[in-house]
Amino acid sequence: MASGGTLYAAGNQTPALPIRAAAAWAGVPITEAEGYVHFESNKKSEFLSKFPHGKVPAWDGKDGFKLFEGLAIARYLASLSPDSGLLGKSKEDAALIEQWIHLAELEADVNTTNIAYLINGQLGAYNKPAHNVFLERHTRALTTLEKHISTRTFFVGERITLADLVIASILQRASRVTLDPALRAKFPSLLRHLDTITHQPKLAGVYPDTVVLDKAPQYEPPKKEAKEPKEPKLAAPKAEKKEKPKKKDEDEDDGDDNGVPEEPKVKNPLDDLPKSSFNLEDWKRAYSNKDTRGKDGALEWFYENFDKEGFSTWRVDFKYPEDLTQTFMSNNQIGGFFNRLEASRKYLFASVGVLGTPNASLISGALILRGQEAEHVVNVAPDWESYKFTRLDLSKEDEKAFFEAALAWDLEVDGKKWADGKNFK
Image (cartoon, rainbow, N blue to C red):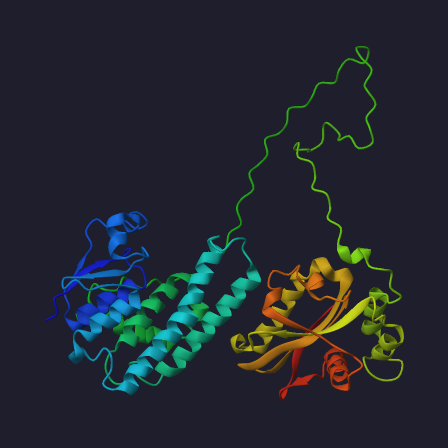
């Protein structure tokens, strides 16, 4: 039997569960660090002398071997008992174990963390579109895991491996954050697998009880404190003193002024550009009221009136098409992006769509914007850097064709046809 060692961990934190499970399955004795207090003990010099990054889980072996990072420790403990089967029976098994662990950790669990931090305010101001993106990626990963486990009992081979122990811990965490009744209904095989692993007699007491949510936690905006009513001021006797006439810019004394001057409005540098003959609002009306193509169509109006000195045309592409799943969700993402561009409405027109089919799609389209630099217009949206902006030269036939197809909603890119879209106007 392996000599064992001491585990430093913050209670039932997710990365600690596979460590304890691997030790129990492989027969490696572990002792929980006595008196460990998270964010206190791991900042002390005694701990940092052993584990310089100050991170837990951390392993202090009786043989002097020290290790941190949860998965590294779990793999090491599993390796101490090759007969346990936790690392598979072949190099192919070992590779598959790594595959499923990495998918679950980097796609499902990372986005569980993102969602938890977002709704708790640990990622700054709450952003509903970001929440939706994290949930979409999380759900996509769980869907892949569900499909695989639906035809088998364990993730690799016919026996429990480290992949099963890790995925069970990740699912237990998801059960506290995202797995509401609607989402649980999509993953019956994963939940069956979770129940199978956590109720193994050899793992008794390792995993906590699985939470069953009635409703997934949501962001709750802070409640506004009620203002205390101001005491009314008594009017001064008329004969006592003449009131000094107020200047035009003097605040009224009995208003809701809090004593803090309003911040001056920052002028947009786009307003200082030379006046253009191209009226964006007229273009938006023409686009809305005319057929896009054909004689006397919107495109014909555009070419007759466009001012290439005052405005420019651009192609936009979402940088991460591999993260897109359902086309309707991707179309909602476009709508969210447009909502965050609201401050630039007077400078921008856009026609952007989802091209392709579920789980094989991309987001692409065309912009008409004030000035010659896209960033000056689109950087009002916090997620603008998730999109690639490429200048379109309408004197080139292929770029002109792209522009016209995006506006006419018959764009095709890399064999993917327009499925749905939205206009910003």
